[in-house]
Image (tube, rainbow, N blue to C red; front, side):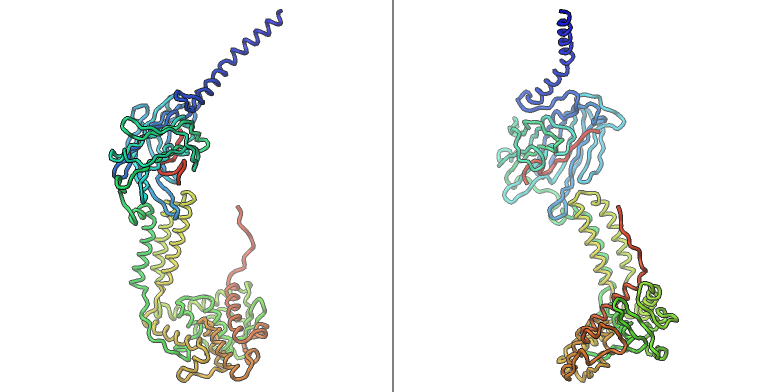
Length: 597
């Protein structure tokens, strides 16, 4: 009997201990499932959530909109300490990598019917509005926040109709939304002409339609959700109203002006381009070309290195390669092809031949060889090779730059500085934006780089004296590049002999016509009944490369190989290493999200 009584007491005690939890669960479950109108609701007593999210959207005839959002929340001091924040997108990436922008201007903010402090901060794609005082915590319980703001460019202007497609809640809230509603107030002349309405609930792109649509006493369309918006799964509520064209104007800037206002960095690139263009007009336009006539000798007895330097108005690897070959052709040194590298060795008569070399060639030899009689073009000798090339470049610049052409580097330098500043501004505008705008950032940087490269080339300009000399170089190039038949049509052309071929080979390499010059030589040999592969062998060269090639192939292959060898051997050796290290929910205007802070 006593044991039975103890068991009954334990059962009764357990029942009363569990009753509060059971009651809370029943209330929570019941209130989540059924509301006053049979809709799904969310009503956990100790959780933070949005009880009601009501949006009142006033569309004006000029296309602008005034939106009032009334957001009732349950605050428990967890996320909602000082108040709530609301994210509003103002930057919308377009499919063509550029973007559109919209206005977001706050009119007023209330909490429980009274003015509430607020401040804004920029985000990747818009503005975050913080509602509340950072020094004051809100009292737990239910609070109603009212946010009124102006926005524009939220309407779609189609070919056959216009439409408001509005993301009421956004898909980025930190709290579930028990119920959301939207009242669309159109201009009076449109209210009875609405062509279609639509609504979508769920995550981005969802076509679920868990909402009811009615009209209020003033004839405005009212949308109301019929289930909880689970923002933990990035759900939202989007509505649409389609109406005839002609009633709402597409206000503000349009076309190119709107595009540049949305993408202000385009103006920065335009300024850079305009700066370079004005510099080019004032300083970079070439004098008019003269009449080109074929020349049978290099103009003014210029060396091959000088010819290429003047032709390109800059130094490059072929300048040095043509100098190396010309020095060999004149008998100062011999070039030995060691497969991977080239060796340069003075000849017995080298001392007496110095006087026949151009000034830049003498400068090259002096710095390259110093007191040595030979040198191999390897990285181990990079200091000598680098010194020789530097001396060659300096000698050419001293002789020709400023007299025969201008590089206008000072204008390019200013342009580069402006471009660097522009790049920093672009990064500030777009560098931390989303993936689509990152593509825009990269594209703008690429365009900026292209503008600088283009005008660095265009701003180089010959002087009048330089233009005349370059015309003569073109005439000499013409002679080197014609066919044997065309050459014979010239007035008193020189006879192509092995000596002439060899003499002008460095010039042909310098002017990029070594193959055509070799073809002329081969044609002459064939017409004379000689084999081009055996009829000529350069005395200044030794190596397997020529034995396996004709004169024409040798000219191209040897010139290219020598250029590469000079370039690679003029840099210091480095260690190996690595580096460590449409329609649907969520579409349209509006959107964003929010949370507590």
